[in-house]
Amino acid sequence: MNDSSYNLVQAIRGPIMLILLGTLVAMDYFGVYGFSRTWPILIIAFGLLKLLEKLVAQPLPPPPMGPPPIDNHPQGGNVI
Image 1: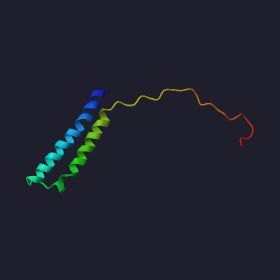
Image 2: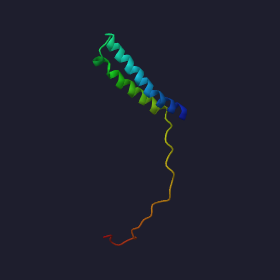
Image 3: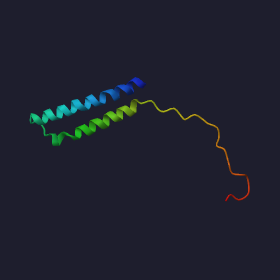
Image 4: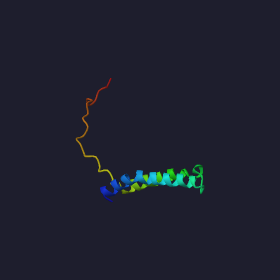
């Protein structure tokens, strides 16, 4: 996937959550299901959107190879 897919998922996460919240509140208002029974759908939807975001994210490039570490301890002898 590319960077635009990742940005799209990030951009739609908020509106989808608000639409879902509004739908659940409307269902509670009209007596279809009580909000106390449907609120876990918000957590499930958020988790699915985060999973989708991770699936479309580009993997991080490996860190650049730097110079080898400098050994400050002298060879031989006791180090105090």
